[in-house]
Image (cartoon, rainbow, N blue to C red; front, side, top):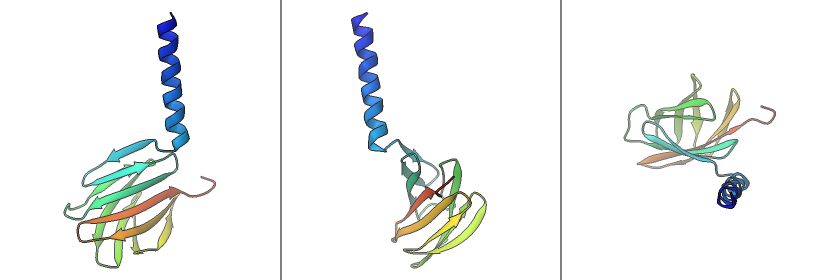
Length: 115
């Protein structure tokens, strides 16, 4: 009985620590990975994969194309072009391109306030 209670208490403490840290999940898709909290994800797209995509925060995000300065994404079916360093609102998400290199593209996506 004591062992069961102690096990449950340890599990509860571990869950509380994960929730408090805000780091809830790491996800992978087709040619993309993401690290997410409850309302924000950092997505890394592999530029060598055609049509790299991932589902985050209940929304599919796909890399359509990219050059040195502009990235075109499809977010929840809406195609948007975003300059490196800039962000846009697409539906319930704010999406920002934070890095563009020869091998990968890093994008931050977060839920818009009030959603």
